[in-house]
Image (cartoon, rainbow, N blue to C red; front, top):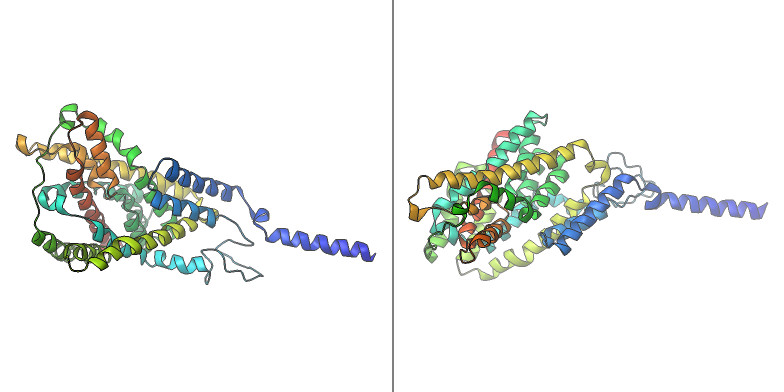
Length: 396
């Protein structure tokens, strides 16, 4: 009897132990999300699609979908008092996720972007800023569509920003307007940023003629140091006086650029554009990925967000290209703009500008569009932040 009791005790302990393992709590939802995380990592390594973003996000998705005992974020009755998951108050991941849900990380990303961005292409041809503004039509188009199909005004605003192809801005806006949708919105925004080389070329070819693709633009003029220094100061005053709500993003963007262009704060500029933005990118990617727990993420509304994000991104690209075609009707023959740079109005820097260059070289191997495309590309960064500020003003 004692021997039987001993084996029963061992069996009971083993059964209880198994109940605490991930095997006992694993669901098809967790399996699906882990596969998605592996796909992200594959695309980053094998296809070189935004590896600095997709590898942290993909690995974060895997981390977030390793189930543990009573891991649901809505009702935690953990007898072991384990603080593991990203939704458990007091856990390490929850503390790291604080920078996402409170909108701390995105302004720091913008600081780094400003410190590594050269606005010379835009300053040498200011009318290119209009392309960056035109591409933001995707944001407001998606907002209208999301509102029409049943999302609230605030949720629609957060979803619409995906069209700007700007992950940090999407996270910042969704943290204010729709925190419960942040995971789906962030994953969608970063996914479309990574797929810029796949999504944009067919649209560009469809909307342009061979003659338009061969347009040669005048070389950019040289931009003086004084102009470069004044731009972030004047840019901050102009944009933030119009849209004060965009101050956290625009203020850090222009501040970072001033650190770069002033010439006397090189150490700060190097820190902002190097170690700081790298650290924040790791944290934001990993925690956003980990926030996609199957029980939170796998919902019908997530599919709707992905679909609206795709529509928004396509409309933004289309809007930029068509705007150039229409704008060219007002320009003299020698001043026309190659519509292949219209796609760069979205703020996926510098990938969308590289796509302009790639497609341009397909039709003329001596027609380099990269420097021209960088103008609307950096304008798109400003434009998406302004659009986010407008959304906040009306919807927050």
